[in-house]
Image 1 (cartoon, one colour):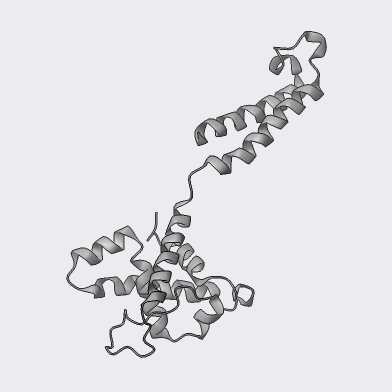
Image 2 (cartoon, rainbow, N blue to C red; image 1 turned 90 degrees about the vertical axis):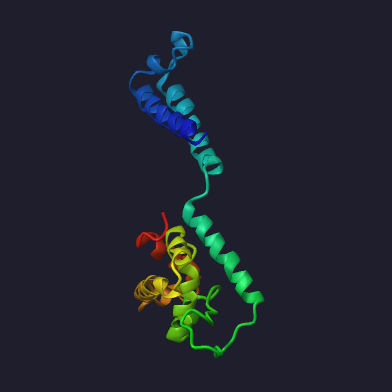
Length: 182
């Protein structure tokens, strides 16, 4: 359906432009005396606008949107679990509590909390999740989590206008740019 609407949009655009030049070519179904530039342009411009509004409604959601939804679901699940302020073990991937944080909260959080949260986020990537599942050591994902923390930190560094944005959205953009999500 998306391809069909895209094709109709393209044809309508060409027909609207062509109708301004030679209306008889695009209004062949009307009697010759009723073929005007205004009618040709108006008809095909209306078709163009209508299809342009319908296209986003029928198009599939972007993969980044589905990954963001998955991150939000995992954040809700993480909220249900008791969050330890100081983990009983010193595992680098435990105790992340920034899943639903704002950029301002991310900036104020400690590096261990950021790294643990990033570890949860990178596991959304099918490639990284498979790597972790095939390995007997969770530390294989640590470089990915560290890169994600660096990317988020660099992206928001010195940007006070994004302090109320969701960190998960910034992390998703970073993961797409770094090739973790396709």
